[in-house]
Amino acid sequence: MQRLKTRPQFQAAMAGGTVSRTPHFALHRLVLSADAVASPVRPQEGPDVSSQRNDQALFVVPGSIPGQPWLGAMVPKRWAKRAVTRNTIKRQIYALGAEFEPRLMVAAHVVRLRSGFDRKQFVSATSDVLRQAVRAELNQLFRRACISPSRPAPVASAPASTEPGATPC
Image 1 (cartoon, rainbow, N blue to C red):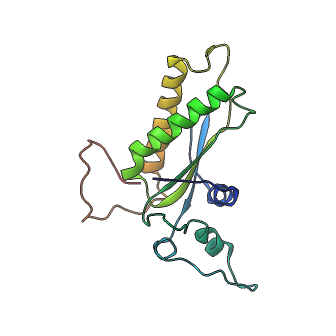
Image 2 (image 1 turned 90 degrees about the vertical axis):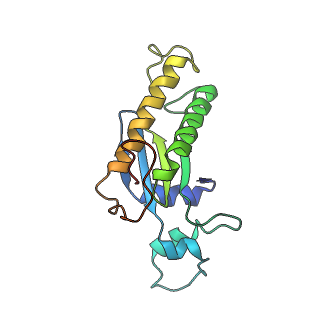
């Protein structure tokens, strides 16, 4: 899995649309076309250049492996005041993203914290209770993204996953 690093990459993925939501998180996805990911796109000029093509070019990076999903995490200070809490949530996002990588479609994904966890309920910034709550919600978020009706139908020749109930997304 490759990580989103630049602001334009995050903006392009967010513009792709919301695929899944939970009470605290939202998952945004920009589907990357196979031809744009496989070969670098030369920048074009003129009024007929679509923003979609420019967005695709953001994900052609030297040294990147074509055909892998991209993942980014947005945890704003507004919803998680302490840096230790933000970093804990980001670690959970990237860890679960790595677990779901085989089932994620080739796309740019951004997981965004959209509301805060109650500091009265979760007193410690890195408590096991908070980690479990975040992990459960993120698991639900990624599972919903895999079941989303906007994804293409799975190909019959694709190898079956060893996990029961695993579906590609």
